[in-house]
Length: 305
Image 1 (cartoon, rainbow, N blue to C red):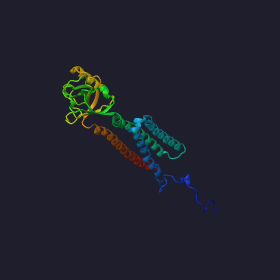
Image 2 (image 1 turned 135 degrees about the vertical axis):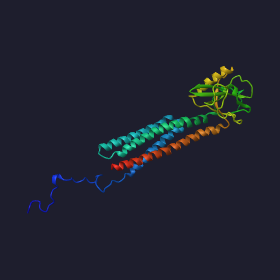
Image 3 (image 1 turned 30 degrees about the horizontal axis):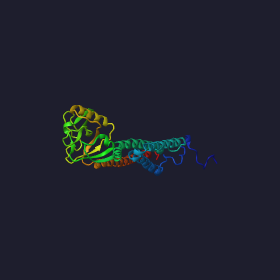
């Protein structure tokens, strides 16, 4: 009997090596989709975004800003934890792709929520909270009341017969045009013009014209306090120009947006804040879902999903 007769002959030249079981390149075999990782990467970054965006947008940022920023830190810590898991998986020879994706998604969610939440707070919610916490004064007569008496005014309803003195309007230009007009009672000359209607880019700055707020509404007789600290110095300069031009005095000027219904305007700040919050969270969910789908398609093509 010849040696090896009846036994399988060895493959010549070393032949093809047996494929490792479970190889992604084995014909006819596919790895299962990791549904847990996919769902986690769809919802976890979104939950982080929603939490940080809410903390940075609303009352927590107003009352306890340190806690609001602490939420951002928590999001960044979660990002670091995902990155650590990705590195650990790579060192151990396990698939790290979804950990890497989670790291990037959490980083984007944390930073985007902090930036857009802060913007939503400063432009919408902080003015609402500031005015809500200030006093409301009815039947204020500009000829009798002084600015120092209404330092804590948020909403002011002026007495019948009050209006804007367009003849003493003035504008101060510093990139934008800061426009002011005194709020007076009747035609009488005031000892001190302490109440001023204001607006930006709504006057010529040369002639005594003022087209800010509800200047042409005959029912407008109220003011909503200016809360922008960055604009107040420029309105003061405009008042100083008016003092010099018209030979008047403004001992303690207070600035208001001229309108008929301050409550509706104040609530508009709050409504805009909630509107942009909802828009933000749904936009981020759609963006994160799209990125996850792209990742699934990409990982499937290299057999690492």
